[in-house]
Each structure stands twice: as structure tokens, then as C-alpha cells.
Image (cartoon, one colour):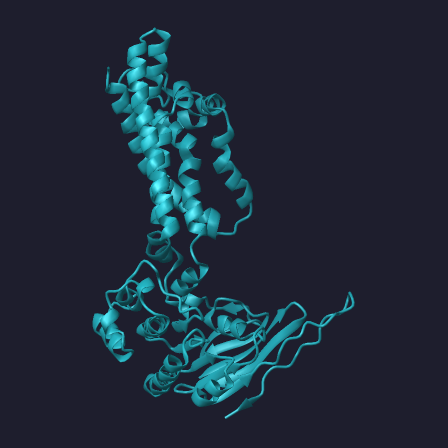
Length: 224
Length: 220
């Protein structure tokens, strides 16, 4: 079970969330651009330290502001698909997927599952957006992650590819049996994939007289 | 034409370039990726040899590396000999003088690396050292090549600092540029012309190579 209760301040506002996500469940983080979705997912990944709160997976604490505990990204054993489908440009698709996994059979299997086995030897600049997305997902899964973080992974794709990958992700969710956090601003996509949803409100910068701090905007409504 | 000074210059440039690259890679990485107090000062210090007159740099190195200097005394304890007027001495001096030529292209290459690649590497479980070798260096090959070429070429033409530290001992410290200076002083102009032409050729070839590499990396 991934437990998240964090608050982090941005100019003029505070981003707060409090949720849990069990293995085999997908929690969607939705909200308009600038609401803080990526900030939250980066905090879960260990790339940005929140101001306060706790993050834990099972009985392992990744972040606890009260105890000043912080586990860096490299020790969290995560799969993270960045918004831009970031891949290492100096490596082939196969080497990208196997970057943190020495098991060639598993790499081969993931390439097959995601339908990109025929691209294994191609350099990443030679493949399309949809193929990059699959390669990035395969790379995230290759290291056998304990949590999967997906930051708007389908945002740059055409409608048909997007629909196909949604189906694939739904199938993968059952197979993987790990908590999946999925950032999207597409509510239909969130409803289709998610077991629970966190909707972040738009953080509107309010003019503040000097000497006053902004009122924290409350976070999350959840449904299941 | 006596080829010994040219060969000595090439040997000096080769040895100092290899050592410089080993030194410059972690130094450039620290200056780009690590936030430490005094980084700004360290960065400027690395670039200081670019603007210092070689005789000034050579003078301070002579003080440091001379028999009474800190480095000279330490060297004498381990090697039982002086550091000045030796090949080791001029190699050290050439390395210090060429340091910015090796560090700057690496810094530029490191700064161009997409920070998301470094984050991704961390998320995939790599240590900062592993990230350096598996992500940063393979994506900085153009910068590394430029660094090697510029450091080599700058050392090939090294004069003032070497004259201060090494003098002109044939086979030990008499490099091409010092030989040219002596040819001119003794009015052996033809030998000066030939050796100078070789250095001009090397320098031009270096600039062509750097331009080629830069053009290629811009279109990559």
C-alpha cells in the first residue's frame, strides 16, 4: 500500500494531497495545468522534496518531514514514465529497456508485450511518439518496480494510439499488481483507467498584501 | 630539420592531454552538477590560465616547483631529484596552463545534457557515479573530442610556461616552440620556417577538426 500525505508550497499557494493506493490499483491525479500534478508525482519519485508530510510504501518510509527522513529516487525502486517519454538518446530501444535490468529474457518479453520487439535495434530518434511511449513504459517496468508513476504518458499521442495504449495499460494493471499513479488532465481517461481519482483544484495566484501568507487551497476529492 | 623537438612536443602534448582528460572530467562534472560553496570561485580559478601571461603563471609555478617550493620539496622526497628542468616538471606546468582548454568544452557538453536523463537514471536506481559513466559521458562525446584536441594543440604550441619551468635542454625540455625561438635567435631562419610550418599545419588541422565536430553536434 502506497500512503501519501504531503504538502508543498508554491508561490501564492500550497499543494496538498492525502491518499492511499493499494497494489493492483490505479489512482488518477487529475486537474488543470498548473494544479501541481507533476509536483506530486515528482515528490513520489524522490525528485522533489515536499515541505511536510509522509510518503510510505508498505512499512518502508520514503519521506517523513517530522523525522527528517528522505529516501532518494535511486533507492525507491520505481518505474516512472516522464511526460515527454524520455529515453536515453545514445542507446537503442533494447538497451534503453534493459538499462537497469540485466535479464535479457525479461527485456525481450517486455518488448514483445508492448509490441515493439521489431524496434529493438533502432535508435530512439528513429521511432514514433507512440513507440517511444511504449519503450518508456517497458523501460519503467523492466526494473521490476514496486510502484509505477505515469506522468501524462498519452498526452502527445494521436487519438487512436491513445485509445490502444489505454487498453494495454488496463490489462497491465491487473498483471503488475503494484500501485500505479497516473497523472492526466483528461477526465474520461481517468474514469476509464482509475480505481480512485484525486482532483486537484486550480491554484489561482491571489494578490496578497505584504506580510500575509496565502491561504492553503484544499486538495483532494476522491471517489472509488 | 631536427625532428627531436617536434617529437618531444608531441610526447608532451600526448601525455599531458591524457592526464588532463582524467583530471578535467570529474572537475567539469563537479563544476556543472555539484552545488558546493565556492563553486563560482573554483570556476574562475580553472579559467585563470586563459588570461594570465604565461610568464606570470610560469614564475609562480617555478616558485612552487623549485627546490625550495612546496611541490618541489615534496617531489624531491619521493623521487630524489628536482622537478624543474625535467619532463615531469614541464608536463605538470603544461597541464595547468592547458586546464581551461580541457575543462571548458566538457562543461559546455555537460550543461547541454537534458536534466531529465539524469533524473531518469536516478529513478532507474543508478548512483551518481554510474550515471556519470553510463549517461553523462556517452552523451558528451563531442565535448570530449573537442577537449582532447584543444588541450593537445595548446600544449603543442606551449612556450612561455615551459621556458620558465624547463629551460631548453635537448631531448628533455627543448620542445618545438622553444627550438623555433632559438633558431631565430641564432639566425637559422630556414629551420625556423620549416618547424613553424609544421606547427601552423597542426594548429589549422585542429581548428578544422573542432569546427567539423561542432557542426556535426549541432546537426545531430
